[in-house]
Image (cartoon, rainbow, N blue to C red; front, side, top):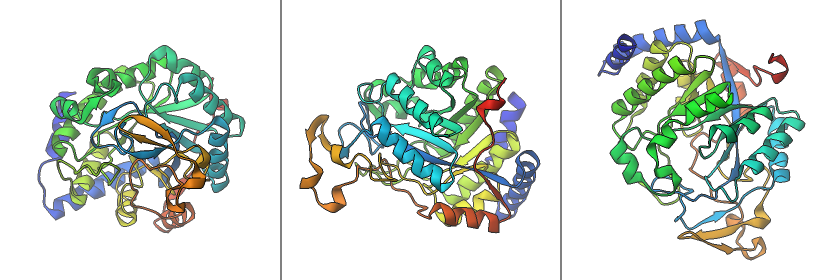
Length: 363
């Protein structure tokens, strides 16, 4: 374990452009060997932007005066049908952390509806839960769970998470282990770059992954590397990570962890995403919306305003047209329609993969 992490640390040292190009070529070679010329596509489906946490960097933070909505299970089904029509077969259900609006029973009904309409791959990115609370969701057909530590720096973590259950660093850190114990076959972790030094975060994430690979050896792991984007609250990043540094990190991860999936979201620009698809990325979102009802407009009639934790109903009929949609978690950078992304990937020599597994294959 020590030698692999030492190798990773060495790959993060400052390097010249020529050295980075050599790393990129090696990363590409390893990626093609293990994954082939493919990119797995997925879409985030936001269930709710209600949240009990106060996180300084998040658009959904409890104290932000934003328009809030929680989709009904029927509205979630409508959003999913739209995505299925576009070709998606891998849907990530995302929500703020609010046990009243996003309960275990609510999540279970959403998953059951998606499975019923023919969605073969459902993942969750919701507030951490107990192992026993995850098990009904796994039994209903949920394939994977995604949970970002956000930052591995305990001091900065405490500064950023002012109130709510997310303040508990260790509870969140242990979430992937609980997910594995519950039976999830895919588990995603990651860190949010822009809060602490990027190299220190990368090393901590690699150490976390190394331990998970040893303990949870039956699961397939993915890494997400999001950088802070503009959001409600207008939080300014504490640190900066350049495009070159992000590229170097992806190459270092691929060389060190050959069989781990690397995820790239629409937080990044179209040009950068096209470039990184040829380096080491294996999974991408596309055509994304980061607000509940973003794909179909579902939930407009149920919008309300939250200011400093207090809810106030705001009838859609009394709002300006530009206010009708619920507030997004963050602004995306790659706004290309899914059809354009698919065409571009094929131009680059990659085959977009909509589905790579079905529960019917599970023993």
